[in-house]
Image (tube, rainbow, N blue to C red):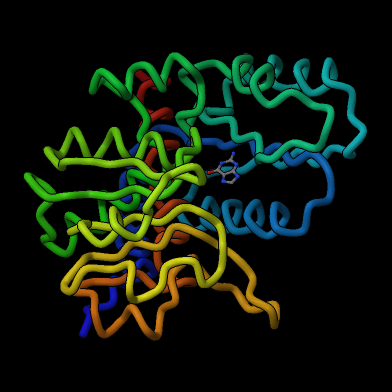
Length: 279
Ligand code: GUN
């Protein structure tokens, strides 16, 4: 029977720490949140981030742009925010509607305001162990493992998914914590064979019901990063929770697991950015 990792409670603790630290600063940190288009999921995420900012004493500046915003206009906004002294962090919510080019937009964000840790400079720093910002979701997962005293050193870690936002940086952080890491993806052969070897299984595939009990080793730590909707429209992760729960030693729920931690790490990154801008 698994211990449920309470991401909500842990996130509340992290945000409380941020809130206290913010009070010691000479001015409020600021986050610019840019949302292009009307994607309902993105709207929910962005509102969540703005509400976290309010809880932490961080000022948020919202920019809602229509889906057909020309790229040059979006880039001009980002450049303006790069220069804006009130803004410590810039978050452009992804995915961007076509034909906007995410890479060009991310590359335009000043690396010292890149609180998502998406800019290639920060990604490079992350890979050599010198990141100023933690990539929010993978860092949130690492924080959960630490908080529950789950050792990573020497453990077999399997990451499902190779996205730039989650899978790749997750593998980097687990490797830096001395885990032995395998990254799997849609082209992986004999997937269940590999996942069954995992002491720590992190799933970021984005498919409901994907991880079934037969894919999980007895006593494994199961971290579910995904946010899917099942057939009845209910939020769920990749993991078939009810059948995996009895087999795992630790498990994260969806919702209330990794999601809140992602947002809490974002708050911490904004604090880090503000501190460096105030130096
Ligand atoms: N879209 C999904 N997750 C994220 C995230 O962490 N940051 C941004 N900017 N967009 C996202």
